[in-house]
Image 1: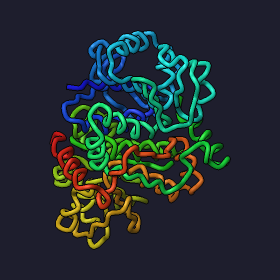
Image 2: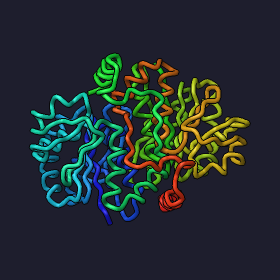
Image 3: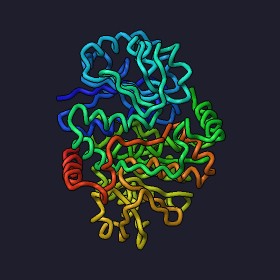
Length: 213
Length: 213
């Protein structure tokens, strides 16, 4: 039985967590557990969504796969000594330690990204060197050994499909992709920072700023 | 203030709901509310995720946008008279009434899809005629008047971006797309039923069957 732990903390971005969940929970012989410092309801960054942490960190000390989502409050999560102590310990025995979006800063604060090339949300790239002692690259996800960092929000879905191919095989990943009908057809073409128009960049920064902190 | 209601029911598929949520909650002057027959924690189809319904149906009688996710238990939701009565009434005044995945069957049970061309999860296409008196088409999402039906699970993200372009404008949709770094790069190419290999179709059916009901 593969044990998968997805971290929740007040102010997390819901899709960062639920994208990988939907993919990984489709694996047979796997158990996904949403965990947090304390059990119970955790509100997302917009405050309009509550997700339940079914276990505390100490109840899931040795997950095989760790997923750390990003959020508006990642700096607080990355300064939370209980989370960092758990993560450092859990990383010792994990098969895979992963982040989505600014979840990378929690990995960075735990000292796991030193000297690595990583990705995170494009709007946070300028903090990668100081917070993670790592180098940013605009990729959908980046594997360095057993650590995988994914780009902003929606990138966790792509990362999780890759992860399935690694813990199981490509056929299983393809089956899950089809089960989730993951044949993305964005109606617009402004998803990539390096290819975005300036108006989209300004607009996106405004969207990110307007989200509650 | 735009009022957006996302329906929850025991056994819903989480990404069906959280994909559109993440996009629509990024709108300024909009309020997303997760609703259910009764307030409180609702478990997803895999049972490993609990999401909180912050309001009961009767507390949100006239949302501007209705989003109905699919799930393993859609037949029960589509037979729930409280849900159907609420939906029929709410649809009278909604600006947009939408479904993701098999959420379409709830719209169908409320009599909203008669004679229309709709989409749903590919694996459920054979039920569209009998349950919805509608015609299935394999598209990412289909608009018929103020009703939009989206394909399986992940298609709700694409649908919601389109919805933003309609309730606001394309620039806002593009800004939200970039804010969510929605530049999907599936590592595999088996997301579309009509283009999938038979092994992926068999595998996906197995994945869907193994999910708890």
